[in-house]
Length: 263
Length: 304
Image 1 (cartoon, one colour):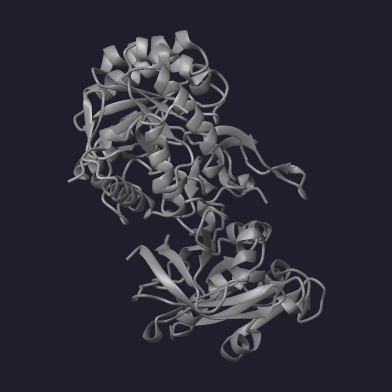
Image 2 (cartoon, each protein chain N blue to C red):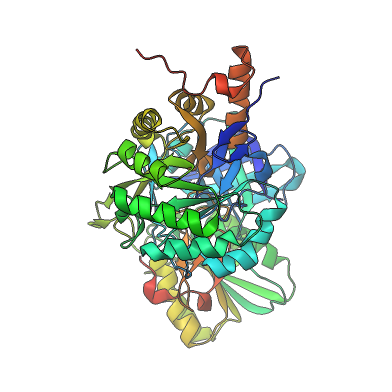
């Protein structure tokens, strides 16, 4: 159930270059789906004014611990990175439609760009429990200091890392690695992707032309997160706009008019 | 027992808190957080004759003490509003104000005629002040004669109370409020967002897809407050304050300056509990002063 949760900051640590893992203790239980998000009020008061939408990262229901992983990108996340353990933080959620995973089988490719891994982690865990699915991950980052929990992930899944500077794994972009994988091993049954818009846009080309079913976790600037302001417009393939907070953030490649997506 | 009832023309609101147009969807955007019926009234997203897709994203940009939006009046159009949205709103048992927008003067009259036939609408709010569209809205809200003509047309075609939403920027809002009053408007709402802009420096481009947008939030509160103060002294019809109200104290200031109710927008988007928190604060404050009615507070600002 969508709601406002007052949380205590349970634990906080740096997990990479400008990357943080925020662990919150919730006041009650929450039912979350992979791909859903929360609006985090990074601190009380009017500066910054708006909440920050973040995908949930991991959830431990027995301990009522909900985790978020984020990269410092601007003022909001910078303030969030300086919060202290034991402090209060209120969150609104879970919001939006998560990934559709019903009836999924066969080889499933998860493609993460940078911090996009935070949005796919819970999906990887869920699909990992599905005996009909073989999960493979492609994870591209700028440089190896931007990976987090890579070892833990690699123990459980087949992970193909890529770095733009070549400091770990394949040198290049995640999308280039995906193309190679498709050439060598054939088409996957399904693609899930989360990352910067240029990555998603580039990935939409093979996904649509080769008719690989797939979903992206679409990020857009928003004010309310609940469908009230209509701010988070996503160009829709049939014309007009979808809204990331209500229709998404998980959207199929073919729902989006990629030509009109501004990067 | 303190009464928070406030009269806006023919309409009695149970309290002075109104959800502003464009910030609560079609009036029920916050149903998961509080029933719309707990508010004095809710104002819907601006409704036009034909559906509008709205402006290209990004549509939201946070600024110091505020935010810019460039939604561009995306809405389902009046037909779908009546068939799909209004029934949901009637169930919420809220006072419903429908905000209407037209590119041409006659659009307002046509909208008034359609909406005047529907049950469950308590007033129409005319958007004559949106900074985010190329045609209509603000261009009519700059000129007293256009304001008068549109108000008159809407009033006579709908039979509903007419509120006029004006901008605190540009023209003299008190002057425009007088024109609205003369034409028979039952309230003026001041202010809409104020036109503003942000730039993405590294990308050397405007931050918003619509290039410029409307500024809202605490940053515009003093501008709106001054305009409300002046308009409330210039007209006898109720003035409704809107612009950066984020706390009970902010709301109390607008009421003191002469507003008979306040609209909340950005505050609710930042914190969905804000309307109920602000209402509680107003009650506590006025009860603490030993007042019996909010009437004893409205417009009692000392002259010096």
